[in-house]
Image (cartoon, rainbow, N blue to C red):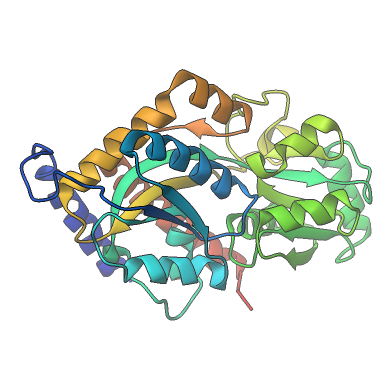
Length: 326
């Protein structure tokens, strides 16, 4: 597994070495001539969907071609990953990938894709997970949450966006570090999990901050802490989980754009330039930050390096926690 990953990163870096070809120097200089699809591996309404639609709107204006967001949820994101991995590498099928791309090799014995079937375009954003509670469990801070959980082992429900999702693993790490036992409730995406928490059907939720931020601001949900080592730029009033009582707790989620391997390098370069420009637009960047994202807007190499560094961390967490998918 790790040999395959190293091979992919070596291939990605070799592509980057030749990735500065002039955009008009090939037969692809008229690209795009038809609609582009961005495949999102989760249902509509979550944080990935927010980012995909923001970028799709910008690319539609820049390319004068429709850029369509297609939600392809299921299988722990593997359905979408497998679909894009096998898509024609012509630039018309893109993937908005996330942590599960690095997580799933540690969770599933077989996968419908290999990492070397993807060409990085840009690490778009990072966003922490946030631990939130709803009306069913009216606690105000992490310390009280842990105390209640210890008095009621296995009786406090903690929802997430799906087994094997970053929220699932972040919750598992929380249980381990706090020495508590929670009831894991997986959903098919963050949006339905948030809706059920607001409605009082579950006690708590670990989900990407942008998926819950509006309900936090409205007061319908209470944020107990975010998973990253630093506070969010957009909502600095929310403490980190480490600050709130679990020193050393640190997990962060990422989202980035990829294409099938074999996509012409000049198309990868053009997509990188245009997506980065969209994300760095002052109005768009301000909006994304206000929604709980941290804008990165990187080169393809940064995404390749980020995958390389994050994958061992997730795999170790899976192994140490014994996390499994049903």
